[in-house]
Length: 311
Image (cartoon, rainbow, N blue to C red):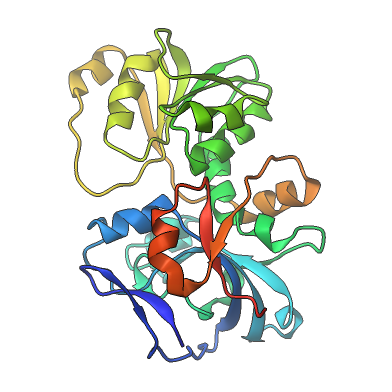
């Protein structure tokens, strides 16, 4: 089969990849749609130098084989982290932090930028009939957005700033706005910021401070901006992953008693429920065949991805 493969240095389209065979605890998923995440781009820049394999982790597909017969033929989305089940993290409800975890398209496990993928059956979630593929493919980043209120108390009376005007920021701002909080999105692109205006205030510059600041800029500049925007005794939530390092004045964190919270993957069942209830605005996905992967990655569309469905 064809798939977008990363060899540790660069991505390439290969047509000699075998169709994977599921292990006893896994399912074989025929991919329908797979979306590009900024993490995929960062892997190609060196974010995960030890990873080799098929890229991609945002998907919706149909189960072809499974150790759970009830899932066969069902449309599904899936969590991306599979822990060992035996370590301290796995046994204390922190499987996402298992030191030997597999993470599809990111660490030790092939991803979804190919027609077929295997994954642990327990990580799959059935997609309701009223959610089309083009919306279901947002389940993984929406779950990541929902991890913020899982980790940080968001009061409806609070003022929150989200740094970044990209795809993840778009979902984060909506999730936080659903709490009733006043959300301001700080970005660099007026055309992108217009998409946020039905549920958030928008700005390209800001001289006020906020109780909670979410860095979803996807670049080292995000934490620098967050430090200037957060109030004393406020909270910064870091959502950006990128290749390279950044410098931060740790003394100002101490003096101003700022809390910094890292936030990564999140709960899928609430994400699927939100999609089913139609409570979110979702941008269209610009779809490409996998053979046009370079064009898809270079696209300036708000969201791009791959269509593996039979025409």
